[in-house]
Length: 220
Image (cartoon, rainbow, N blue to C red; front, side):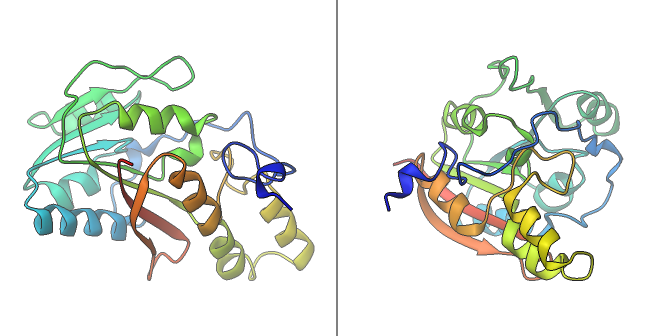
């Protein structure tokens, strides 16, 4: 069977149920590296390995991980309210840009050049992921690091303790258990989706946060 007939434009099964009215997640109160630590450590390794100097983080949240793991580089964080006001008040010596909301159009103002652009666990919050991907590609940059939860790892390794088999199958079919998420991808689904837009260089699953996946990409 042709996969194109069974998947939507985001490489999710056509019968997958999204959450169209997801809640807004305020990350300004998350002053720790419980989530996505390995993604930021990996970003730091890429910066050092390639001799990069500048990184842009789209959807940087509280800025804690950006400052902690990438603070020695030139950093620019993109966020919306209420995070952007928190960032400007908490880290006045760093550069923060209001990204705008994808539903109304991302803000095209600000610095549009970087060595590496990352967006960590943001895409699952956005109704039309293509908007985020196209926004990232609008920057003058050749390397992109994108992470998102790994659906099957969450269900298989985190879900057993809470859910029976029927509930686990429901989680795979959507909507996401996290009310702030519109959709979630399995590892293969997300690679397939990113491959429509980028050439994927490296792909990883978290070792400690096992239901995190991230992919280093470049332009086709």
